[in-house]
Image (cartoon, rainbow, N blue to C red; front, side):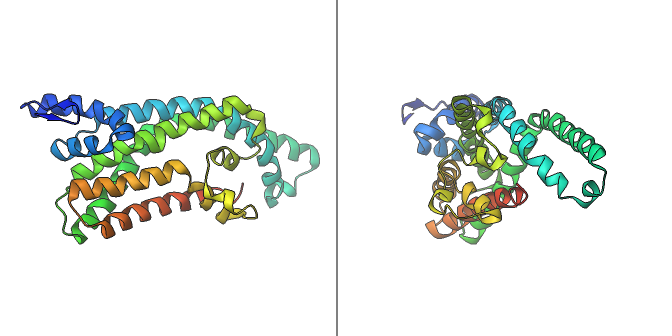
Length: 255
């Protein structure tokens, strides 16, 4: 049987493995085809691999910008810390330089956590979607929603990081004074509130085109896979997007 240009065989295992890889592409260009495959065989391995590889590559490419922003902002933040403020000037400078160097070294290895974070986010999003599937009396399962979340992460993490990396390479790492300015290089709702700062600035920055795109994909995917009504599907997606933006907001409060 031909569905959307892809031939579905009678073997679930072979269809699932090929479909899993195709989903990493179709979630961008033909999401309904990806949704239908996930609904038939909820495989997620290849989208996970693609999202992880893209995210790690992007993380490494933006690392110079992150470290430059740490050189710019961390000394001021540490000087405001009472433990550093009471030190003599020479010891203060040495201790601050040591703390910044340690933080930059740690940051150099945070890419190792990318696969773990992807799985944790997939788990949490899968649970939220499963909860609202139950509320909406849908037909979906956690396995299907987990596969949906991991597949959507190809965009929300993988492609997102690559696009940010491209912007960093074009503009140069020295043009980013804060880590939030790196995140904010992607079009986001903070552009509509130029006077925002602190948590609000970070929250609005987190509402960028990629995260909103992913929210829409999760909602449409939940409706197609779980056969649930638009209200619970969009509510679940909205909660996920808002929580993601809030995470960015809390992370930017001291930046």
